[in-house]
Image 1 (cartoon, rainbow, N blue to C red):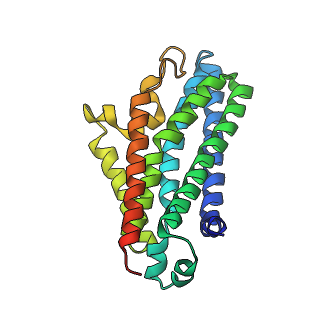
Image 2 (image 1 turned 180 degrees about the vertical axis):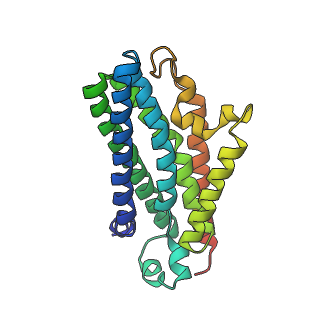
Image 3 (image 1 turned 60 degrees about the horizontal axis):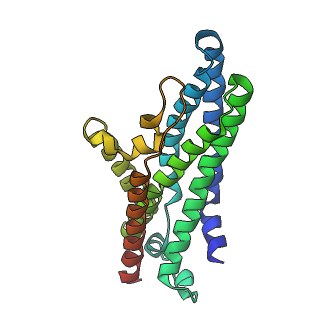
Length: 238
């Protein structure tokens, strides 16, 4: 029942985000490949995918901030938490289900746009490397878990859904500014998610060994933020 409740609370935001992201990314790939047919070599199709992926990362971060709005704290702020808290389910499970739904939706917002971009690029630009597509999807899906968990933590600390979203977006902007230049940009989560540092400049594709250590650190941080969100909700008096 809690899974269904979480879906009902987020379905409008999720479906709206899904259609918007797919449409924007599809247009970007289609339009850029049209230019590439006249101006660039065959490898341009892979650079087009890389550029579209960078756009996807930016849109994905914005939509995840919106998807993670809500939760027990926001329900309590408007006096609607009595029914949820009356259910025979622990607060920890409430929080974990919110994370699970948020992660599943955020994953769909990676897979669906990339499936459309790949099909368009394979047809128009002849870029049909499945391995390149999987690498980009993996970097965004795994590297982005920290932002899903961060959104969960903010919504567990800040009352008011829109206030929590504003705080979340403010932190994203601060990270972009402070970690946009060397030497901090080497550890920027955006750089990890876009995969730009691992793109071969001759082929336009990600090749070589993926940054497994950085991905492991990211997942560890995400797990820590989720644990902190659970503890924050458990200590609240509703």
